[in-house]
Image (tube, rainbow, N blue to C red; front, side):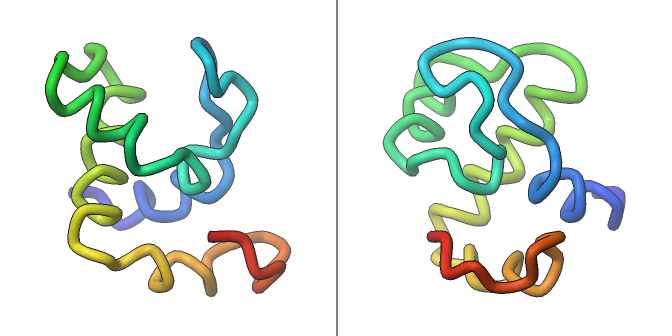
Length: 76
């Protein structure tokens, strides 16, 4: 994992699908789990979605809070 990937999760919006425009760090866990079951896309977006799934699955979302540009809006 590249350490910059954690920052990308808090700044990169989902580029397609039902949650297009939502920051990857804010995607619902059930959506990430769907990708885990069905297969992550290829490339950077798939790698970041897989990383976010692991973070969500292990209850580590709060660790991303300090990396957010708004630093603590209270988002999940």
